[in-house]
Length: 145
Image (cartoon, rainbow, N blue to C red; front, side):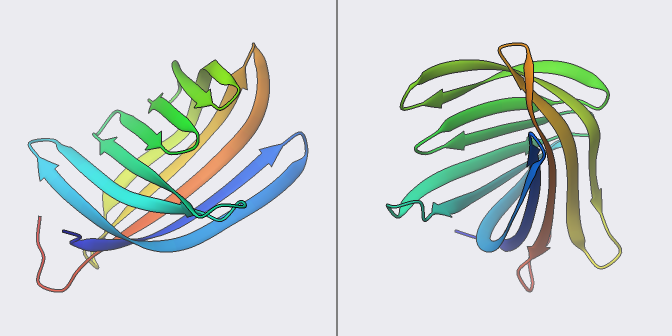
């Protein structure tokens, strides 16, 4: 059951080509001890209407991002650190490295949660893009964590 909604904005820069994605979606956020778990579905409109299931494990120092759909992705983000991850595509498995230069998760006075993430993605030792992700989480009326 969804208890919130998200507003997501992603700006990517790949070889000088910038793209921007924005959407809203119902979501579920759960807090267990010092960790928040955020679940939502992302609709893909590239030819077929496929769904990508997104799961974010959000802690003070670390974010683990999992996306499971036509492309499977797992990344770990830690401020000012290089971490590893992977992509699984219809064409095969690709190991990735991530350099996170911005990671912040805060609850604002208006009771919304804000996730700001900035990172460089590397595959085969080459930078493939820079990504800026912002997610605003609004709890449904009457919901507290």
